Length: 264
Image 1 (cartoon, rainbow, N blue to C red):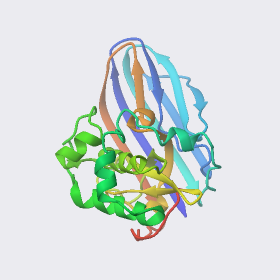
Image 2: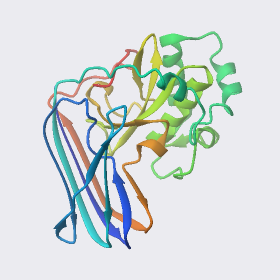
Image 3: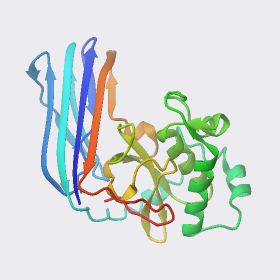
Image 4: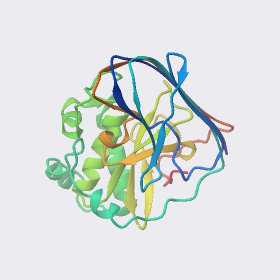
């Protein structure tokens, strides 16, 4: 499986700001070629790469004001091996988090999915969220969490993932959020999915059904959207004026929703 991913960002930076980008594919990916550039008013900027325990690669630097253009491209051949288990994850990803209020949604989860466990539970939660939400671009706020998504019954990929994660955590299943490049996604953008730990492995869950899971490429992994943002900035304001994402694969697989899939 050969995948090509690119992203292009243009930013209007209003002052000196500390910037952290998360647009490069994760460290464990089978990368055969890769380029990444940050250009501020025509001048290249040097970033420091930071890597977390999941292989998430963050690129950080302090920028002055001006117009910044960011370009990333990578070729990924084949599928990467499953990430090794980090025991602490089984604690971290059971806890409620900023956008996944599993404690508030515990009564709902227990009443809707009583008696289910393992892979049957993953399938039931994914189907339940898919049936009850409508995918409506622009319908949610960046501050909305799983509880608000359930009340509104609509959202985008991050909202679907937050609700799936919150329901699973409420049922004692470790679950986390992953940003991915997703060949087949329309409209094309960065995509967010969930991963759940069942029977000794992490399985990818996507209640939007907008792209085949098998060809997705991991970018970042965390508790919720706060941990996987493609850009974080501090000190000065900035405006994102252009964002273009592309992800293609040599042969787009058929996603059979009933099958278990691991990100690779």
